[in-house]
Image 1 (spheres, helix red, strand yellow):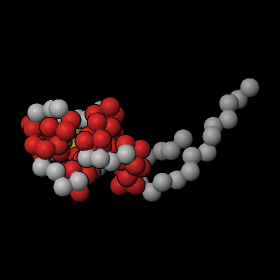
Image 2 (spheres, helix red, strand yellow):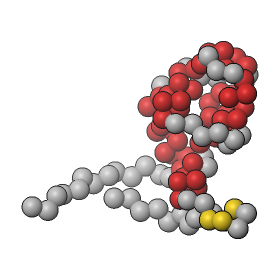
Image 3 (cartoon, helix red, strand yellow):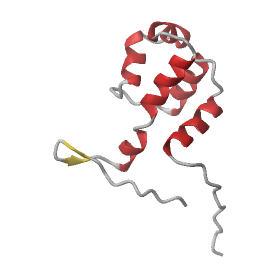
Image 4 (tube, one colour):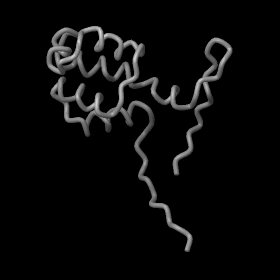
Length: 105
């Protein structure tokens, strides 16, 4: 099991969850993938059949993207979703092999 060393982030006097800190690299990656594909927000929106405002909000962390939407975004940018996930993991931390857990009998 990988243990993160990230501490909760303080926002308006409240600590946000660890999940919010882990999500931080997602919006910049979404924007980078779109720009590298040479697409405008309107073009990507047309590719994924969503409004342009949806693309804008995802890139600016005004809305969270779930796994299915991440895959849709990747396909709209002509990026293999598995490659997009690997890239996200590389942005967040260096890839380390995961040791299988042994169950106690």
